Length: 124
Length: 124
Image (cartoon, rainbow over all chains, first blue to last red):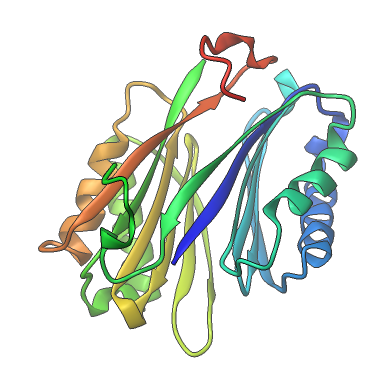
């Protein structure tokens, strides 16, 4: 099975990215919108600012890293259910924190298999 | 600043990937070998098996997701210090859990900036 991990940087984000509770609540709401199930959460704070927050999902995770001093929010989303949309998760997070900002997004293939042979392109 | 996030799947891993303490201890040792500083840790367990474990670093994070039923260990490493080696982190984790297995690795560019303009290739 090939899953696509969504990786994004969101620019020009608002001050909400300094608020760990807002980040976690938004990530959980985004997971719910995508149909995923939250099973835990954790975070770490940096000095003088910035934090990393993770929401553990039954389907894998949403990981957020913030750089408030440059208004940057980095997002990683992996949903190990092909019927669920990582784009929906990102949309919810962007709408909350960076509605007017630019998003740079791409997808990274993750191989959920006993061997890498499932890949056709031999890139690893 | 462009940082390179290391993303990997490790195949044919041993039963150690079922042990959350072993995963966290190995990730912290790997971080230390790379010169990084651990500032926290967390994990979530899946039923009937598998887990996600994260070590929060002053320089960002090491994230491990395991699929013991198919002997798979997925690794994400981001070190926001260009003098530190994500390859060193992966090497330590692979040696502990998947010494004889195949590794599929690639690097994902993360933009730590106020805009995506720092990128030359306009891929996002």
